[in-house]
Amino acid sequence: MLMTTPAYGLTDRVALVTGGSRGIGRAIAAALLRAGCRVAIVSRNPDTLEAGRRALSEIGEPLAVRADVSAQDDVRGAVETVAARLGAIDILVNNAAVASRHGLMTLTREHWDDVMAVNVRSLLFACQAVAPEMMRRRWGRIINAASYAAWHPSIGRGLYAATKAAVVSLTKTWAGELAPHGITVNAYAPGPIATDMAEADPDTPLAMAAKFLALQRVGTPEEVADIVTFLASERAAFLTGVIVDISGGKYVVQDPWNAWARTPPV
Image (cartoon, rainbow, N blue to C red; front, top):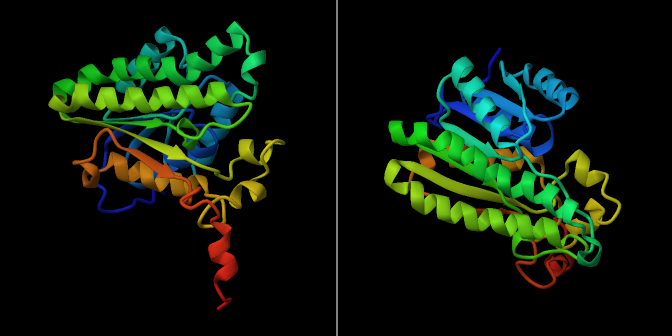
């Protein structure tokens, strides 16, 4: 049985979530289903795509579409499939991304091209594919996955940070170009989030990452999904070109742990 979240104004809106089969993407798809959307998830891996569809089917009836978002023909085909099965796309969430853990001196051209293709080029292809119909109907929400790394890169992850900085720039430019057509374009920038990928990261354990956050804990995919659902909603109609920092207050001061050390226990 579909459980809906009231007051978002999203009932029967059609949402496409790339990278929606796992992690933050699956949580976003779940939140949009609960808000009353008809949701399609996209992944290039058939096994994770089916696993995501099964998990989401406990909430609603998602459409699972296999596509490589770095390939323009695949993106166009996915958009056409969603439109044919669910209706014209109202909400696009460009969540798909891959990590990169290479120092700049060891980067190869092939790795650079692969990461840029998924993290940046796919955003361009997807926006180009959905925007014309949104423009015709003068309503649309495009929400992109940036990252805290866009403005504070980490050693050994310069390429990933560069792709997310590109997402920030493209989000602002798309926001300006599409505003006359009733379309808003925003981005979410997660900090440390407890996903399977993050928990398996040998370089930055989540417990260590939490030390640098004002809230002294890592976030959950569901907390990111709540923000994305708000950005998709009628309540966010006057927001565009905004990058929402979802990092739990990372480095809001130089030593966020000191506030906790100075606070007497309740």
